[in-house]
Length: 346
Ligand code: ASP
Image (cartoon, rainbow, N blue to C red; front, side, top):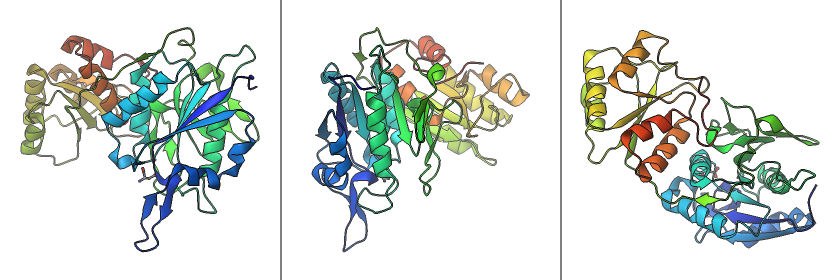
């Protein structure tokens, strides 16, 4: 159901969806938004208004950064009252990071913010971009009979599935089905009908006021363990100037080598005030540091449990919390509790 005063703000940041092949080099390059509209004449069939905002220049999402996230938060917050929902067209490569960051930066969000993109440019006959775009607009304007938005969350819609943004990972560089939410059920499936999974959708914020946040601290590193990792490498990462937090990608349910030097490096870093968060390298499942001795030792060294967090979510949540100058104890505590539905604490 779409009430009379429905309207959508479509924000085009860049990405494959709006790219065209350079005839000389064969590389994909951005083209402008008007051309995008030309390729999707179906946009005119919507009975409500769709306004647009274009990043100038549009960017490949490999160039996304906290400044661009701040810009998105500004655009949404400045136009918040005016629109029923927001659709962000974004490159797929870092879409899960942007969706995660926005979920923390848009506190109290009570309207849909749907990110989408495509694997094939919209100018290509077999593009997946059209379906993704049109269905995202429909989702961004979906309201319950009482007028409340059906999905007041930051989400990614891709290839028939609507997912909570901070639960997503890009897991396929080839298929149209590029994103998965491994640890949280999809919020909707689009077939002949769009079927919403209402019990999994957050509606707590509906009565709240939007509080936009802009402060992010990027002094973070990600370290992925592998058998044979050497002390000099771990030590160099932990000694990086300005480092405030490390996302440690461990094995299985949060396990790491028991070697003395490894635990000593982590313990020393924790004592120096560096926050180390344990997330698993596995796509699905959660960290349980008490399950095996190898995980338990990490806990004793001062490593924080990241539960079933994606790396994308852990990185952006740390940026957000550190940016807001919470005490060390507070950041550690908040990393183990959900603030935007990003983890399930078992
Ligand atoms: N490199 C592109 C980007 O992330 C890929 C895509 O859009 O799918 O901007």
